[in-house]
Image (cartoon, rainbow, N blue to C red; front, side):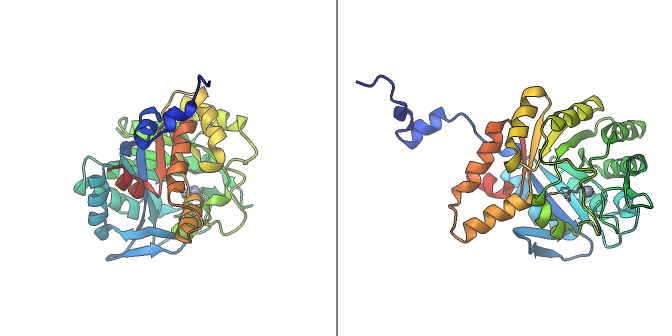
Length: 321
Ligand code: PBG
Ligand code: ZN
């Protein structure tokens, strides 16, 4: 006679539901949005099937759907018409993201608006900062610009700014600039452990933000490293990060798990464009069953993520209803 029969707990859906250890709540989901200049634009992004470029005037329907679904927030990326060496459209009061923030706050004042804070979509060279003559991204000069961008995003009404540049000391510089300008209520969600990943490919096509030369390995993290991720998180927290992030998600769940064990701050994971495109293509081609999306996102939560940034946010929210 067997005393222990673990299969009793798997007998039917009701029993499995009762004992499930990890669940997803719709408020934990953040949905990224790509905003373009111009008007009347709602165009599918070729590298990310099911995701769209929106001009600001076309956001109303999308924001209505996101709020109806109860999604926790949106993360905004801007595609400016004009780029230059210092990314000046990133801190322009009427820049594409600033306009989008104001419009979303008008449409849905309750919805959390997070602005990605980086320069690569705005610089003509596609790097995440200001270049030295030899092409090296100058850390401290970049900090001055990141601070200006943060203040301009806060002025437009962002609730949270999310620096994704990986410069040293950026969280401190941004926190100081926000406070000096009266934005002590604006929170910082730091992309703390952001790896130099191949999984950003579809995003760089979507955001026209690929570097025109070289790569991002002098600022984003080496994917062989995990202790370094803990140092990055620690530095960001000391400088005033309210939330920390690991990015990408699926290949980095060991990092998520360790960061969760070491720090108590709210922890976000970013399930990036390459993860989205891989899963979407496999499901659309019938290679993988659709439930693989659910399996993937629960794995992120099981590893310890509190907040999940995913292009599947609307899909998951629909299923949670
Ligand atoms: C900008 C930024 C990138 C992503 C988010 N913010 C691209 C990059 O670092 O090249 C990637 C997001 C995704 O792949 O979904 N620094
Ligand atoms: Zn960047």
